[in-house]
Image (cartoon, protein in one colour):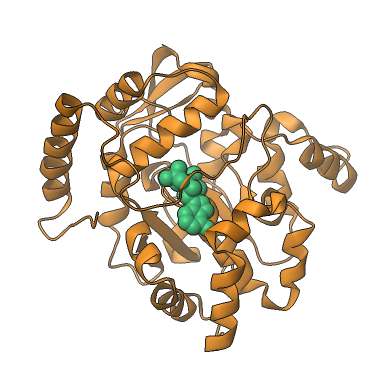
Length: 318
Ligand code: A3P
């Protein structure tokens, strides 16, 4: 039994935010999360990681689902066909869903009841299912490192994906509008101030970037993945120690190609009330020409200033 630590954070009420309900700013970091996070903060902070877990920690809209599909395929090469019948959120553990509650999780609830009739849903459905899993786990979260178990990198491998913030923002705008109206200006202002759900893009990137030399952290860029997926798969193959052949990596690339994922309902997360597809254009530069000139200039200045603060060597390809 490991010692349970208290997560060193305080909360500041931020009122309501779109379809997420009441949200809190989690300090001293800069992460805004639904009020339900409070219930799970310590459970996540003390989550019991195992040596063979693969975590995927990203800022939302950076290519998480794509990378989750890739990691699952690379670690389940012998059973790729399963991806055609079993939904992605049953194959990977999206632990944030216990407090974000975006996905339809009736299946998860039933599964938990079957596996553990005494389990209480309020202790986290996905978190408990992950704890009960006997096989290799892929654990996906959008929380920054300061809200994760501080020992996670010493326990298992973590993959992170970073995407240019302007495309990331535009992708978020499209996503929010699948749930109901949110103007581009509103989404941009909350993104710039870091007060949208999941908080500040830069806080998330900083928390990841400062750990970049840890041998158990592998950082990928969405733009690099789009430019040469095979090169990125080879690096991931080495990092994960999956020892896949070039032909197998080609299979992974094909299996997770944008159109293949888009056309297979089991390759995207399933949603409660979601208009249209989870996937949009899946392109680099998707935000070009989409922002009014004043906002576009503000965003450019904001990216330039904050990227250099992360690290003078930090760069985005666009
Ligand atoms: P767009 O909205 O620009 O199309 P996340 O999974 O982190 O929420 O990121 C979603 C973004 O990744 C969306 O970007 C989505 O279309 C894109 N995406 C998902 N699967 C992809 C794939 N197989 N190839 C390229 N982009 C993909």
